[in-house]
Structures are given as C-alpha cells and as structure tokens.
Image (cartoon, rainbow, N blue to C red; front, top):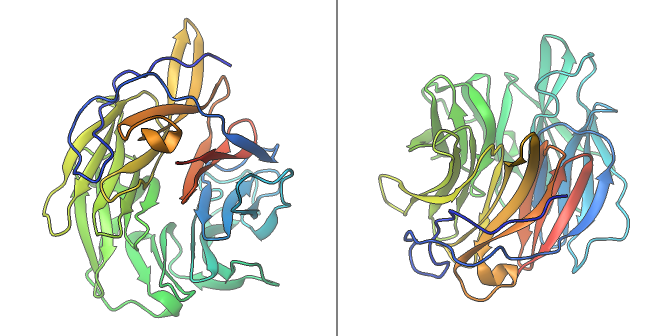
Length: 373
C-alpha cells in the first residue's frame, strides 16, 4: 500500500442548505477506517450494482468463473456480518465461450418490498435475450421472469412504490415498458447507442452517453414519451440523482480537463449550472448519492495516481460534507477508502441514513461500510 497524501484541487461549496457556490475545500484528508467484508475471491464482470432499503443491502454481480449473475443480501446493521452470506444465482447469463464484451450487463432496483434486475442473457454468439427478474426483497422460492423485446442494452429500472417496475433499454432505438408489463404508448423513435454505464436518478430518470451524437443525455419518462436534456461537458463516466425536492444533479468526469464536474438543474430551470468537484486522473466510475440537504451530495469515485517512475496506485475516494466523515463543519472534505497497486475493475455505492456502502471489485469482490454522521 502507498501512503495517502494531502488533498489538492478540490473545489466544492459549503454543504449546508444554501445553494452551491464554488469555493475550495480546506484541510488535510479525513482519515476513515471502512469495515470490509470479502464476498468473492474470483473475478467479476465490470458492471456491479448495489441497492438499499430499510432492512438490507442488495449486491448484484456477474461471476466470471460460473458465468452466473449472482445476488448477495447483507443486513443493514451497525456493522457488516462476520462472514459473507452465500450468493444466490439469479441466472446463468452466458453460455458461449469466450465471455462476451457485454458479459454481466444489468441494472438493479429495489422498492415496494421487491427487488428487480434487468439483464442481458447471451444464448449464443449472435443472440442475446433481455430479461427482467423480480421477487420479494425478503427472499422467495423463485424469481418472476419476463422477456423484453427487442433485446438490447439495459438502461434503467424504476419502482412504482407498489412492487412493480418500469424498464428502459435500447436496441439502437430507445424502448420503455410501464410498471406491471404495460406497453408504453406510441412515441417518436429516439436513436440511442450507449457508451459507458448509464446512471439512474432514483426517480425514474437516467443518464446515458450517446456515442452517435457524442453527448451525455438525461432521459425522463413524461407519460407519453421521453423528455431528453443534454448535459454540458458530460462524458461517458457519469451518475445522476434527483432529490425529493426535484433538484436534478449529474456528476460527470471530463478526461480532457482532468476534472469531475457537478451539473445541477433547479426545478423549472431550462439549463444546467456546472461546478468543478475535484481534479483527478484516470477516473472510470463515479457514484452520486444524497447529502443531508437538497443542495449537498456524497461523491464516490476512482482515480489512477502516478506515485513514482513506473509505479501506479489505484485509489477509491469519497468527497462529502465534513461532518458526515467525522470531521468538523459542513465544508466538503475528502477521504481515501482504499489505495493500492491492484486495478479497480468496478464499483457501486449506496447509502442508508447512517452509513455509506461500496461494492468494490479489486483483486476480488468486497463490500465496504463507512459510518456517516
């Protein structure tokens, strides 16, 4: 392991109820000691998902050794369990060697006492099936399974609060299915070829980078079709969040400018405002989670650091209002969750009122728990 260094170049506002305004974070790195629980020693697909409800965390990942899509359920408690719960097989998602580049693609959602997974199942080299599996969050004898057509890349799931889920995906054209399997009303076709991982805003909308137009877009279902909004300076690495008050926020990494940006749109506004969150290099993933108010956030992101000639360190960090990380005050502070020589292959994050959880693939799969507040 390498030693952590002082925080440089983080440009974030006060994390109070006031609106965001640019100012530099101050002080050294906050030291945190995450709890860690290994879930698997093997390698996983790059796409990981983590969702939380009042009683549990749900981790979904694809196991390269078995070509299965697995679920691990972890109680939401003051501490991680002493040993990992056994994984439950959702489905075997690849039957043709070698594994496809889309191996393990899926999205996860929880709500209304149920969980759902939208995923691709490759039956042969040129044929994949898009499936929606759902069941009671507390466990059930089997998954309820639907096949969605035409098959394509999964984009988002949204709970209606009653245990049913709407689904969005693209086969080159955007498709949508209403909760309960109802067909969406006819709408003008929207071409979409996704690059990178889509992000859910938690309220039914999602972001996706369209490689046809080379632009990051936010999509929201309005009852008769999609509302589509471009995100300025958006890239292929992004995450989004809509607060209970209606504020839409998008975090996006721009490799050319070496910056992680926060783009915000107030309710009723027609354009996004943008601020720099931090300067970073080699970021491949970001998670955007709610802070203590509509105008404050928790950012989790990875970066690649050159430590010395020929030596590279891979780092996973969190930026949040200081008091959430155990520091004084509401000014944003940074804490390094993990740093080492092994590449970070993927991560996902979720939070409960009292903790941040991160599902991390880095030389094996583990879950981290960081107390908040």
